[in-house]
Length: 266
Ligand code: ATP
Ligand code: MG
Image 1 (cartoon, rainbow, N blue to C red):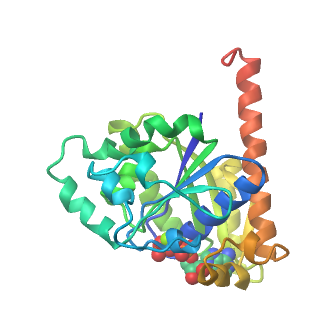
Image 2: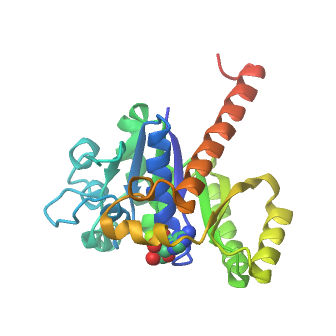
C-alpha cells in the first residue's frame, strides 16, 4: 500500500514544490511507484514536471468537485512517475465545496481505489491552511515539512503543529509528522546554524539528516519543465534529493522490519 505524504508548510517559498517534484523523481529513479498530486492552484508542481496547465485537462479540481475520477485525471510524466495536475481552476474548488457534504474527505475518498498502484503518494500543498490543504492532511498518513532555517520559520512551525493537532483530533487520528526537511540551506549563515540546531533539539530524529542546500540548478530546472535529476544529475541539488529519497526508503524499511519483529505484519 502507498505511503501517503503531504508536503506542507503554510509559509510561502520554503521549497514545498521543489521537494514534491524532485523527491517524486528521485523515488521513481530508485524504483518506487510514485504519484504526485498538485494541490496548489499556482500549478507549479504541474509545470515543474513538464505538464502544460491547459484548462481543458481534468485536474484535481474536477476530482474534488466530483466531476472526474482519479483514473481520468492521472497523467504520466516523462520522469517515471504519475501526476494529478492542477491549474488556476482549483482556486474555485474551495468555494464550490462549501455546500458539499464531507468536503474534507473528498480527496481521500477519490484516492482510495489507487492506493494499491503506488508505493508513495506525495501531495504538494499550497502555502495556506485552507480547505485544499485540509483535504491533503486528511488524505495523508504523515506530513513532510520543508523549512528554511530562519527565525520566522520556528514561529510558523508552532502554527502548523497546532493545525496538525486539530486535524488529528477531528478528521484524521493517524496523521503524524514524517519529517522536517531543512531546505535552501546556507551553511555560512550563523542564524541558519542556530535555527537548525534548535530544530534538532526540539524535534530530534524527526529532522531528516539530509539537508537540501541552496543550489541554483534547483531553481533553474522548473523553467525547463524538469526535475533536477533530469536536468543536471551531477548538481548538488540533485545529489541532495537523491540522498533524501534514500533516507526516506531506509526509514521506511526500518519501520516495516520493526513491525515484522513485533508480529504486526505477517
Ligand atoms: P509556495 O509557497 O509559493 O508554493 P514553495 O514552498 O512551494 O512555494 P518552491 O516553489 O519550491 O517553494 O521554492 C521557492 C523558490 O525557491 C522557487 O523559485 C524555487 O525554484 C527556489 N528554490 C527552492 N529550493 C531551492 C534550493 N534548494 N536552492 C535554490 N533555489 C531553490
Ligand atoms: Mg509551491
